[in-house]
Length: 378
Ligand code: NAD
Image 1 (cartoon, rainbow, N blue to C red):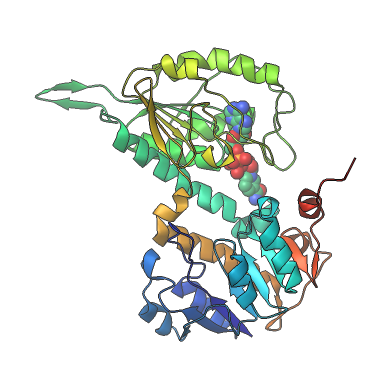
Image 2: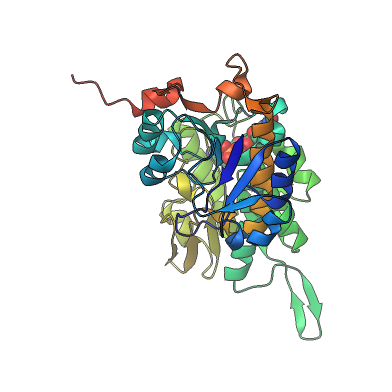
């Protein structure tokens, strides 16, 4: 069975779906690995690092492959180069990518969307969202520190004492917790808030202070560990009581998300006006519309003297380690699908069924199918 790794062509994408270590693991499992020339170079993995472990180079990462490993969803043109009936594993952005998903079904591709991996204990080593959130949470702090016209740590120098920066983190999930740890290591004073009370202990174990807002979120946590959406009334109260914390902060890092929904607006323009000039908001929820009302996804803007950044695809800015982590999750998933060196789908298994979007010419994921169906005529 041939496993292939195409070069990513979306502008700004520097990750590669398979790194040499993981390619070696697949070779050991009896698979033939081919890598498109130059695919790993932007992440720091030259062609020679793949050939050294016995992978072959190819000018076309789609052509003859039985299994294609990707990071970004393939374009319709790329899908046209996939072998009919091939298997594809990667991010597919299934809910907003009707043309791509239909093209994959039309080509008879068995396509797995890594972002649909069930977040259950058994799938932890395949949890690509957590892996990429870890990268983004870390990088968000570095960007905030870089933009801030202040030090993060407390410094006692002959030229005077510098007080530590105050960082407020909204949303203490995977990215938020990584941001707390990173900001603490840089010496900032860190406070964090999350609607899920269960994270208080985790925040404290990283040296952050959990901000008690005196609000009670209803059914804050779903069985899956994710947040549940709250009422508009709740968000209104949250904004009111959080305004003081936002105003006191030098840097605010927002990561608050509710699966399948637009990110809640938690920082209004008025709250931005209440911040000191030179302060920074790093909005990691920008891809889902942003937690700050003034965020412009993909841009850095200065409003009321506050720099507001809404970066997209932050994981790609640490491409070496992001690729290493991505490749490990994808490799673990491919190994999960293999039986005796071949892909054998056990559709009773939720790890196999959960991320499966297209199979045998059909869109087989019910939620994706419903989301992509044309609206019914009244
Ligand atoms: P996420 O990216 O969907 O959300 C980020 C954070 O925003 C969450 O902690 C959420 O509670 C918080 N949030 C939502 N609305 C908020 C609001 N109004 N104010 C403040 N915070 C708000 O979630 P995530 O980081 O991917 O994961 C969240 C949790 O899910 C994890 O901490 C973990 O407990 C669980 N999880 C479990 C597994 C697993 O078992 N394999 C994997 C990943 C995550």
